Length: 333
Image (cartoon, rainbow, N blue to C red; front, side, top):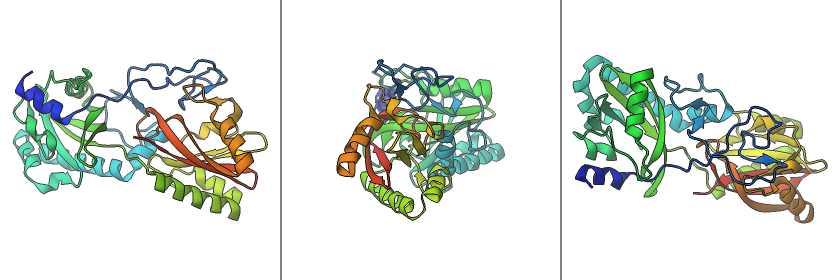
């Protein structure tokens, strides 16, 4: 292995699993866009080739809330991190537009191109790595065109090909996260300026168990105070009950119908008893059974994380409130 390859692998990890659930075109299909199946005996997720975050990889322009096509993308790019990454990319792009390729060196030495955990970097369309304000500075001077991560994803090549064809876009891979010393999924936004590709990446945020329990407590209080108003708030993307990958879901305990779902509004009105996770687990049935006996509980299952687009392990807390099951969960690392 070349020294340059060793440096790259020291910063990167294997790409996130591609075993996402394929989006179905209609509710009549057993597997739906939420990453669960309805009344199906098939438990294995359907393999997909690309990560979808509202826009298919390679749509060719800088993603933004205005361009997103689903609630998950809107939330991701409208999050604090998404806004900061987009703003930093815009600033870096303007700098290259004004100063040309030589201006890329400033990404490595000027604080203006680093925003806390975010940083700008630049790659020529011939594959030469020009500059970085972060850990990838170890690659400066190398040609990264054929670099791959541990599982073989040539994410730099993918970025360069998209930039040549479309002028910009997004790419997802795993990268060393200095915040927790792990390899986590990272989403990078990029744009081509002349012969230079300017990029900024960020790690989709994750909620904690403490945050999930706190949101459940607040949601239960809101339901008791005014259920109609609370349900409306739970559905609002810009409301107080949707934060990154944290959201509220509500189910009528009498008939199992969804009354609210912060990540997948299409579930509202559907029969939760038919809901199975990718492993065939009857999620709602188990929650309602526990809530009917104890009044509250917890459940582990698999679900699609709205900020990563991946089916991941989820732990949800729930409680009965005036005949309604109110729940909030967090995605486990």
